[in-house]
Amino acid sequence: MIEVKYFGAVAEKTKCEFEKLSFSEELSLQKLLQDLDEKYAFESMIFSVAVNQKIVSKTKEYQLQTSDIVALLPPFAGG
Amino acid sequence: MNSDNRYNRQIILPEIGVEGQQKLSKAKVLVIGAGGLGAAILPYLASAGIGKIGIVDDDDVEVSNLHRQVIYKTSAVGKLKAEEAKLMISELNPEIEVDAFSEKLSGKNALSLFEKYDSIVDATDNISIKYLINDACLATNKPMVYGSIFRFQGQVSVFNYQNGPTYRCLYPDENSNALNCEDAGVIGISVGIIGMLQANEVLKMILGIGEVLSGKILVYNILNNEQQKYDFEKSDFQLISRELFEEKYNKTEVEEISFESVLDEINKDEVLFLDVRNEDETPKISLKNQIQIPLMQLENEIEKLDKNQTIYVFCQSGIRSKIAVELLLKHQFKNVKSIFGGVLAMKQLLEEIKI
Image 1 (cartoon, each protein chain N blue to C red):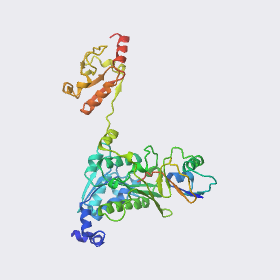
Image 2: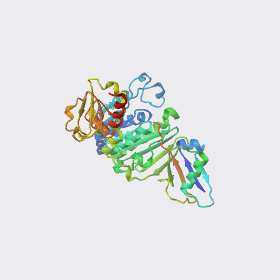
Image 3: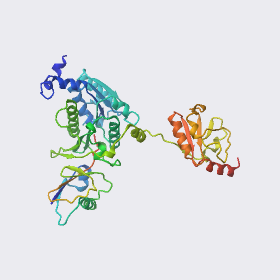
Image 4: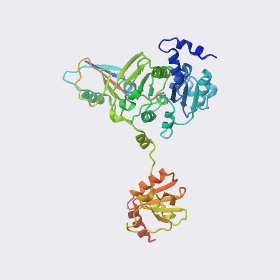
């Protein structure tokens, strides 16, 4: 199981602030993002991605490990 | 009024002391935006004794601001925010210097404004200005204390602190469409909390205490009180020099026109046609008010031209004439345009109408 956290406008799209996802085979970060995009249609929404509290490149080659926490962080604009 | 009395309760903190108070009184902080975030940040910077505070905002106070921009009285509606904020914090602490700039921050004024201060606080409410502030901070080497809100969530970070990561390292993609408060809704408390965290970062930087949020973004959710910090690294390609800043924000726009659209002006005395080709280039064109100065000599012979005259510049195909127009605009020429397609397009048209 991995946990995915959503913030700001991304959480409005997913209608939840976090969810736990199980995966049987190997799952890369890129594949996870692709799956989430298909599920929620983020479209042109911009966000940064963190794995275990660290922002990483969305194209980073990374195999997710059980207990990883992924976060999708869009920029905020209000003030 | 005795200064030591005013600040006594913070001076007795071992982390501050008399020395820390002196650092505060020598500090110069520029706050961009006197809205919800600014309304929280400004009074706390002022009351803590920050020596010089600048406020940049070109908006007026509106009734719909009052629920969250708590430094404004209802009677201030319709008045300039920067001036009203200055009035409020100057009364709060008359010992400090406050400057109000009731203008919009732009590529034109950002660098000269930023140079007068040590730290820049981003209390704005749209994304494109955050990139502008970030880039101007990089060009002038100032730290940027960032704060931003989405409904009940807020973000805080400090960019470009001692050469640390920047807003572009966190969000490299500039084409964002994030909602501001007007579109997304906001309550006063969330901007208050985030603004207060920003003011806290400013004080920590000046005093050299604690851990500055450099290379970290703090995300706060006021509905469940969850607070997370995310680390991010500097990406080297996001460096912005003064030259790059000018190039990006203050590039002079060269206007191109078709020869056809100026045909009825070719006999007017007040219009000059400037040929920037070399003397041996053909075909020749001869219009009533025409002068030839090859591009290479243009800068040296610029006195031959009148800065207030309407000048249409042409060359063989319309490329050198654009460079010439750019050069003339740099020398404060008012009305210069480049003829699209150059002589090749002009000649064809002149033959068609047999002038």
